[in-house]
Length: 398
Image 1 (cartoon, rainbow, N blue to C red):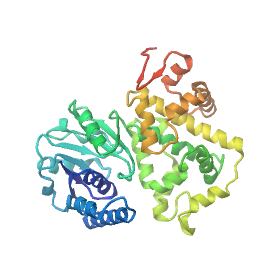
Image 2 (image 1 turned 60 degrees about the horizontal axis):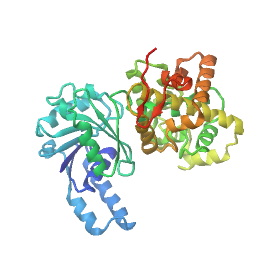
Image 3 (image 1 turned 135 degrees about the vertical axis):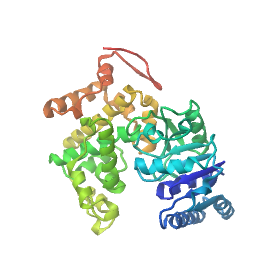
Image 4 (image 1 turned 120 degrees about the vertical axis):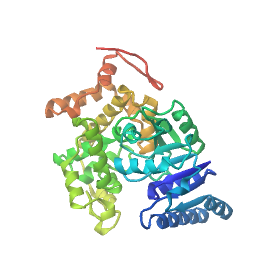
């Protein structure tokens, strides 16, 4: 199989690495100055480290590198069985690139996008063969993160999902099927992890380090502020703003002024040396601040409860809207962003009544629709619905 990757940045380079390590021929295309050299150098360094650690032999390194080619000429993608685009999150840039790519590949080749938040329908709107197009959303770093969200578009062939699920499984990935809605599964369900933490900070409930420490105490590897600093506020804020706009400015996804100001000031997190934390003393600044943080245990529990209940509510809404099955929602959040538990599982353990009571309390206090309970949560709490394996078992209308 020949795999073409459009865009040789960090994400594209990682996707190509995964394909090559699974015996696929890989060609990278990128016309941005220096991108090709950086990508090739990155792969060579990664493979050298794998050899040093005994996870790849010299022969494997040589044979895998022999499968990989880099080009500034897009005609190099000719003959590709599947093309995976991984360039900047800009609708017009992507569509212009597809027009070039589609003219070079066979009609039965697959064209996929790694977009994390743009509409598959919009991206495919000017394609000659939109039935061969869909979303194949990897998570960064692609060689290490197991999850891939498979997102058929409204015009995708019926076999798109099955074909991509089989391909991703053969590459050792964990595929989950998602509906073409803003943020798909992970970037929709994860929004409250960041936004509610920032809201608690803005209210003066606790400091950045205290909130992060409280969240990490229940098994999260990183707190929300630490994680946004790692992702970068340019990226994280833009995804939030995109999802908010695409959901017709639903208050549940409203961005934060605090994070917007960090982005505007160029304080993007670790990559600029300052975000919610100041990394002037080193990249361990967040961990050091959290170790020094002292928070009342009861307050910590309330902070965690509020953030978790909003995540659970958002997860149930994904099921309610038919975006994904309960099983796939939990799989996506545990395999895509390393949640210690799936939010649906967490909701069952916490009790739907406690989740609903917390949201109702916040909704009454703030009068803000960001806290409105999902209809499915109300039905689960009343006993009028149940969540079975992979599906909502009861259908109902009001």
